[in-house]
Amino acid sequence: MLKKYDHIWLLLYIPIYVGFFNILEVYIHPEFDYWVSYTPIDDMIPFNELFVIPYVIWFPYIFLMGGYLFFMDKGAFIRYLWGFIIGFSTALIFFVILPNGQDLRPVSFPRDNFLTDMVADLYANDTNTNVLPSMHVIGAWVIFFAYIDCPRLRKWWHISIAFVIAVLVSLSTVFIKQHSFLDVVWGIIWCVPIYLITQVWMKRSMQRKEERRAAMEAEKLEEEKLRA
Image (tube, rainbow, N blue to C red; front, side, top):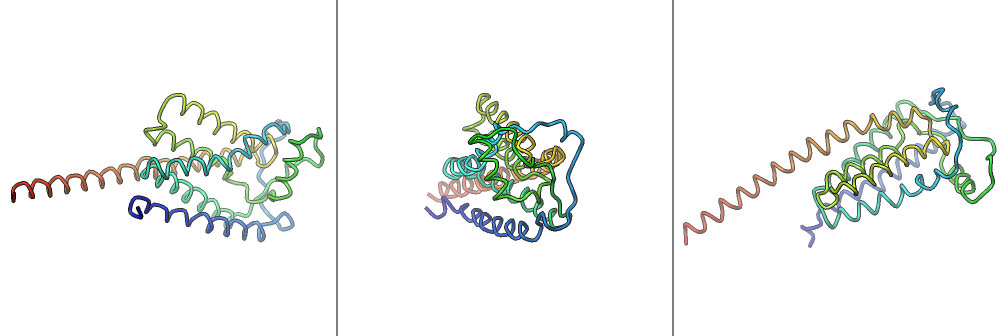
């Protein structure tokens, strides 16, 4: 049982990430100086509270995908977790090197409804700092990579839905003014080496290891037959 689920150790990253992120939220705070992430495109993007829906869906989406892969595809789960480890850890390090934030949040909302209340709660619980690159964008595309990676999920309609969700999550960050357009661009750029490391290099490395293991087992069985 333990051998079957020995990849559970990767989940230790979650408390490490949460702890480090919370420390940065204290030390890189709106009250302190930070580099402002901004492009003129941000002024052309209107606030739209509807996008809070894909923004908050992102949170359970990460864990649901992780739970599915944990039990259904060990290799894909390992690559999935390493996607987050690489993406989120390098983003946190970048926040330390270049403390950044955005000043795009509206002073007041154009409408008053339960969706704007949700946005207000997000604002209250998440500062406008530590935004470039957007970890929401990184996470959304790492989930998309998992659909391509896992044979059980590699169906055109699965991938199409995953792509739409990744795009909506990325757009949500700018429409609810949690991020600048620049944060989204850099979040996508951040995903390029993540994909190359986890879905190309790591996948090939794991496949070669599995092939060597299978060859050794076949050779061992052949030797046992000859002895018999």
